[in-house]
Length: 193
Image (cartoon, rainbow, N blue to C red; front, side, top):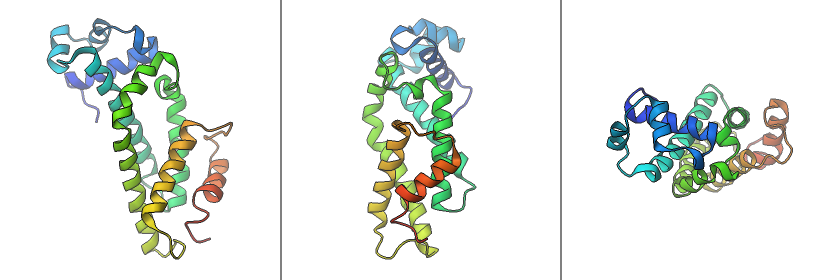
């Protein structure tokens, strides 16, 4: 996901410029300077110019976000543990990223708009990941009888995305509080006690 080739350097530079100045105020020259590359190199990597860069930088940053969340939950044993640690990790990453924390703000609205075409793919990746976790829980005998794994994965996907995008006064970095939320609102009807 992250390398030091010109394309990755440009994407990382675009994210830094957007975080620092907002998407509307950075120029291609700003990004090329931030990446320490020439404009010619920039255009070889992004022949579609600014529009292509904004769309790919937004997608790249979201992919990095979910990769870090996945890495953070890798060692967790149960669905409840993975959801809890994933939400806490996601909340901490969002808090650290001016872009992720402010996707609804005017300064980064262009990035949010650029992400819309990839939203179904992101949702499906999360849903598939959760389907696999639920199937593993089912094999271990931890799912309630009659639980539909596909429906449960869709429900959990919506819940995770909803709580991360709009925590509504919850401190999602408080692991005990998040665990209680996950236990009572996310998996209460899915897993056995």
